[in-house]
Length: 155
Image 1 (cartoon, rainbow, N blue to C red):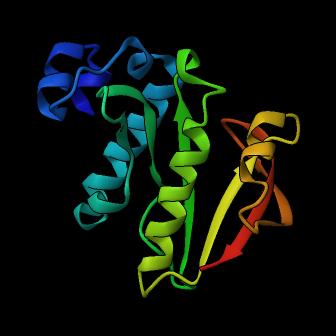
Image 2: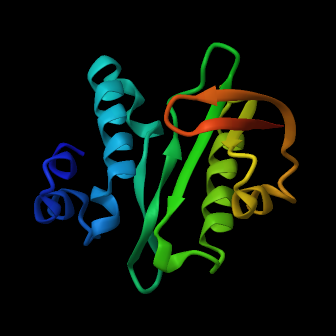
Image 3: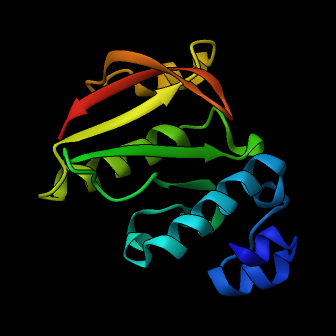
């Protein structure tokens, strides 16, 4: 992540073991890496819950990044986050990523609830979560993304 923050795609790719793309050094992505580096600094044990590159098999294409916003909180809630690179959108990758993250959450005994937050005007993401049992439970204001609807599903 620090290599990505330094715009060093070659080093970041070498460390990740896959060829990362310019999508990983966009302003939005850098905000994610900066936030995650701070999390890791304060809680190294959270590493297994945080953002990773998403690689589609068998072609080994890096299609985006995904993970959780951190380990389960005191109430057993984890928040799912994912982003698909523009060239790979509308091909089912977001749904596949969400499926895997929900399965991971359900498999973890400490997790009781999985959450996603989505801008009310993000029709693609709202469509992606349909069929997963997520229920709208409220809304929040995010300094980076503005108004977000909060959806949860029991694990």
